[in-house]
Length: 330
Image (cartoon, rainbow, N blue to C red):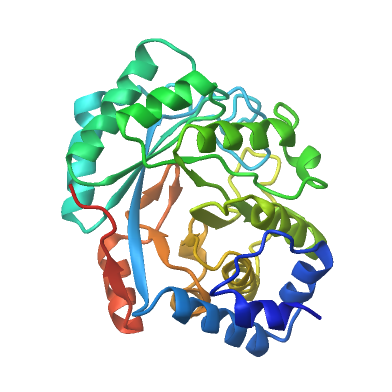
């Protein structure tokens, strides 16, 4: 079994050749053994237990052409949140400034699009990216598929990272989304990487997937070379009006296992606790931080779903003895 040996050597040798069986074996390890392995990797690569705070804002909400089964912003779901006005540049930059003042150093902006289209809204996106960087913050965008030229223009504007999640395993994917292929998602990641932009890519658990599906998702992420700089781990927030509205909440220990395994596979990536964190509870969040999470989304909303408020997060981090990392300064 190579997982123990690989964990011991991961500080010097990042791997991109994890087999599906190896990943699945990690996910199914006795929890105490898994946590010990993950914490060993985490302490080596994140001395001092620093956590980056990221804030996420929905710039264009609802009306998305994709049919993602989990999403309240899809026109295919009765939960569609379209009809809300797009945020203007000055409004976005005011909220970015407020996020920085509250302690965030990464500002993520979301557009509910299938793909980025050239025109006025894309020009405004570029202006927002420049404005966020001008505040001395990392700038991240999630807006669907991009062309190579669009990715180059975003890089020129100073974009730090582009988020484009794989969501689930290649095997499960067709049950969750039919309007965009897995290969199209991977090609978007390739364009982002080719433009010199950091990759932010993760997935969601709690959508009825198997342990093998979770292992397969992590195996795909860990096979990317280089690894994504940022790996958001989400748990499903079941929203009324979506096909997954009746899904039960996951056991928090399942999230801890995902975080720990992701940390072992991708030692130097930021593992981000994302959607569904509010349902985890304090103790599970602290275990996630111990197991390898070194970033959280910060603020009372993630696009359209709830999130713990700023004061609650500050208290949690203080009680856990976790330090806030500032990665970017102007």
